Image (cartoon, rainbow over all chains, first blue to last red; front, side, top):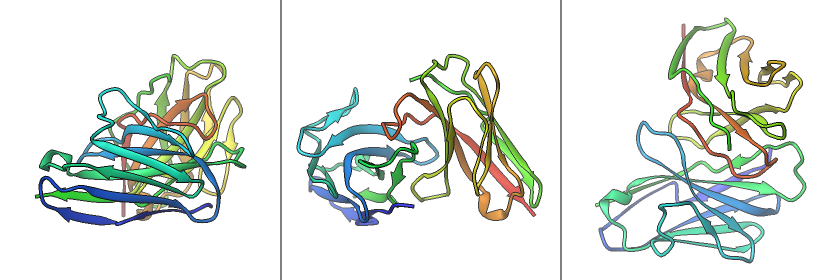
Length: 117
Length: 110
């Protein structure tokens, strides 16, 4: 299947700093990417939908100024957690939908674990 | 999107079939049933999806009831590596956003 890669896999940062997470589709063009957050022992929570070349659509309750999403190309979307605080520590996962897929399959990255001290 | 109901956990003996149920009684006519699984600390992995007919691929079989209000994911010969959280999701968009419920934590035991 198609490959979606996230970087970094894990990151530790100090409170108040900003962290950028990259999501790349390695072998297909992703017109739409989705960002999820997952706390321990909980399910994935959709944060936002990212469309190439346009502003992201955020789910209710997700602060768009806190979680900046950029989808500048068909293979890259970035999530920046601004002024991170310990409560932002979580597992962040992206997924991508391709332009040519008709199977309904959504490809997920390996996830990025953020720890804010 | 319609909501789904799954048992929180299930056990299965290695080598036996694992049958994971899902209720989606409010599913609408154009909504698909998707199954994904998540092995600990990894991103979810697509398993299978269907609309009305039963589906089978190299990983699993999906049985959808005639009224489409419930479905069962079948792993024919479960292995230890199938231990994961299995999510049943209904969505009308192929390749669109998916809203995850709590899923079923399947433990395959030797």
